[in-house]
Length: 133
Image (cartoon, rainbow, N blue to C red; front, side, top):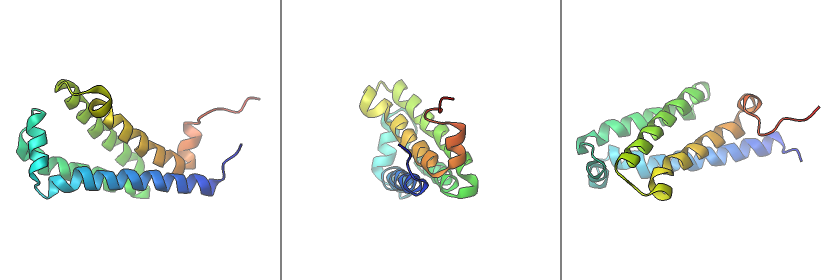
C-alpha cells in the first residue's frame, strides 16, 4: 500500500508540531521563565540549578534550527545530541528506565519521525523497506 505524499507531509507536520509544542511547553519555557521546577530538577540530577537558562537557550536554538527548512537536519542532529546528554544524565542519576532514561529516545523518535515524513530526500536515504527486484 502506497501512502500519498500529502498524507506523509501532514503526518510529518503533526509529529513535528507535537514534538515542538512539547519541547516549548514542558522543557524550554520553564527554563527560560526561571521556574523553580526547572532549577530544582537540575539540582536533583546533579547539575547546578543556574544552568537552566543556558540549557533552555540551547534547546530553543536547536528547536528553531529544526523548524527552519534550510537547517532542519542540523537542528535535528544538534537536538539529538542534547537529548543524548539528557539520557546520559538520567542514567548517571539512576532514574527509572522506561519513564525517564528512555524518554529522550521517545522524543527523538518523534522528532526524526516528523522530519522523515516531511522530507522525501530523507526517506530515500533511510527507507523503511526496499522494493525487491
